[in-house]
Length: 150
Image 1: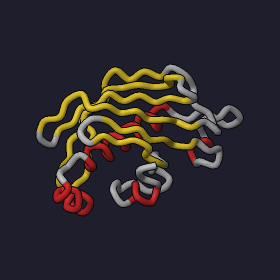
Image 2: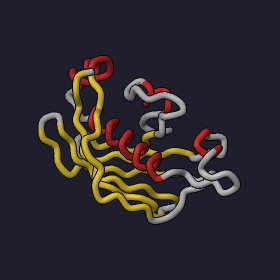
Image 3: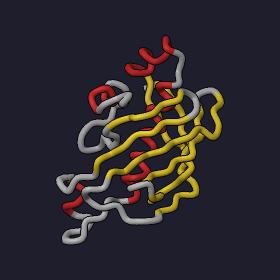
Image 4: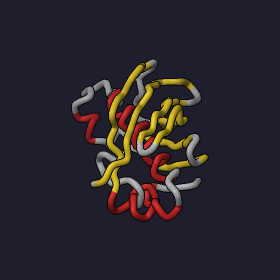
């Protein structure tokens, strides 16, 4: 484990119920990140999606992948820039392309996010993002983000 949820909260501004990354297990700055989210029946989204047939929403999977990408972008900054980024910067997502949902995600699943950098120029990052459950691809997308001042 590289970062637990407490360490992640020190990097990302997201909080419950919208912090969608529980742990980071691999990180290669400027290249890739692997993390996961444990999907629990106690999450508020399951009250309405769908009663009696709980399915984790695809937009939440995309957001979780985006948050993992944000962690990768922040941790890829030069060491001196990371402290400034925590208090003065935020990651805004610019686009989501080629999104595909391949299999439903249900309570009890562990969503594993695997994010790779496709391009990085200045403050703009482009990622290839994939989500897996039990090594089976359940969702994928290309994400573009920018680190900006708060």
